[in-house]
Length: 175
Image 1 (cartoon, one colour):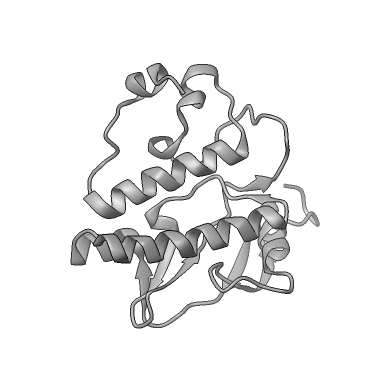
Image 2: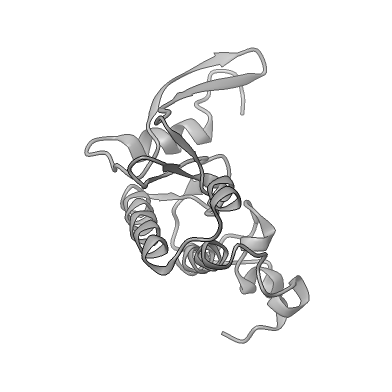
């Protein structure tokens, strides 16, 4: 990122937040440059906390709660896709839950990229949420990778445990 260039994270959030906005994506209210970095001003629902912390404090979600979370997350990700944005780091830590309404908001587009039809050859995100094909061939496509991270997220919300497979097992999974 050079001086005067729009940071990718800001560009992605601007795209995703353009009208009509999605209620399940955190709003970017503004941003400014600061020497050597940029600062974003984001919506902060109150009361809220990230979904990982929420589950640590309250235990795993029941099936009904998990379904509501998943539907909202799918809504957010479909919205991102419609705007040409690939989030690349879907996980409970990147979801806010408004604790009084149970509304979910997707945040942290720092690993994101513009959506493309071809394969991604560089990984960005959290390895424990990476799709099996990344471990096999060091490439992946946006749609299947997003579906995989949704599944791992759902597993974590329902079980409050780490992913059930290790990297070596991931490389050997037959799809």
